[in-house]
Amino acid sequence: MASSQRPGRGILVIPRPGRRSRDRSVLLLIPPMLWLGVAYLGALGALFITSLWGQNDFTGAIERIWTLDNFRDLFTIEVYRTITVRTITIAAVVTIVDAVLAFPIALYMAKVASPRLQRLLVIAVLMPLWASYLVKAYAWRSMLSEGGLISSIAAPFGLESPGYGLVATTITLAYLWLPFMILPIYAGLERLPDSLFEASSDLGARSAMTLRRVVLPMAFPAIVAGSIFTFSLTMGDYIAVRIVGGTSQLLGNVVYDNQGAANNLPFAAAVATIPVVVMLVYLAAARRTGALDNL
Image (cartoon, rainbow, N blue to C red; front, side):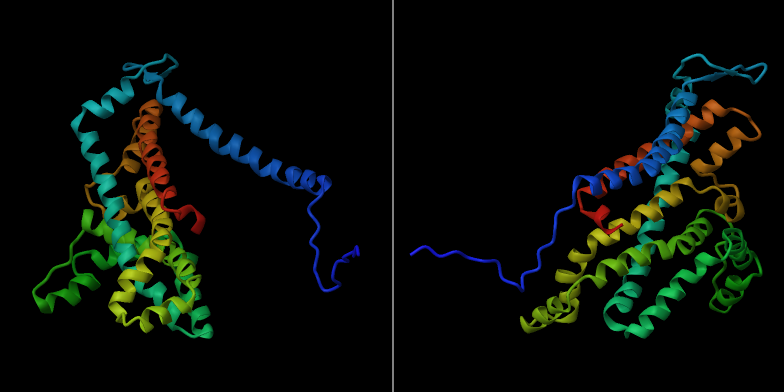
């Protein structure tokens, strides 16, 4: 006896998007994609083309003749190699410092604080971003100066303020970019189900082992996601270095000096390609960890 089945009334059927809906989505994406292609990728293309030009030694005029002299100088002149290594090192140190400081803060916000306190802590983390970059940088200049706040606190212990230099630059940049590390880690930890902590406890793991074997591996992509911000922002910074860096130079300062006082735009463009290439390599490595899914 044949029987016919009818769909149940309680089943929710979600219709698939039609062709018209897909066409509308494509039309909505066209303006931002055009902006990305023209304003961003076009600017990078113009930067690379300019780096292949030269400059007249006598008049200082830009000569639109294809040459690799700018890149040859970058790799052969020792001072530029030193500045490149110094910039990458400072960016890595700032990233590590921010990760060490941000992880316990984000863990407390995501898994310990009450919902009300979570909201207050998120506001507290965001509040430094509301202040001017220059105000925060000059505040650190004042604290790091001789006779400043840090010097006054350290004097009773026989210590001194680090003054202006690479240490001051690292401290200032780590402070400036710390919120950009806290928020991705907080978002990644918040998605971790509490059942993982309960299961780890039921299996006899202590808090330290749970942190090392469960939380850190799960939060690692979020940490890498935050490091993309701190690393890239440090690679391109030049203002904080001028304010608290003393005589130290990073790649951003070389770019600024060559397009300003020296008016050597081709060489400035060649120097500016170094952070771009470094970040492309960094993003390719970060993509393999799944970090881009946390942005």
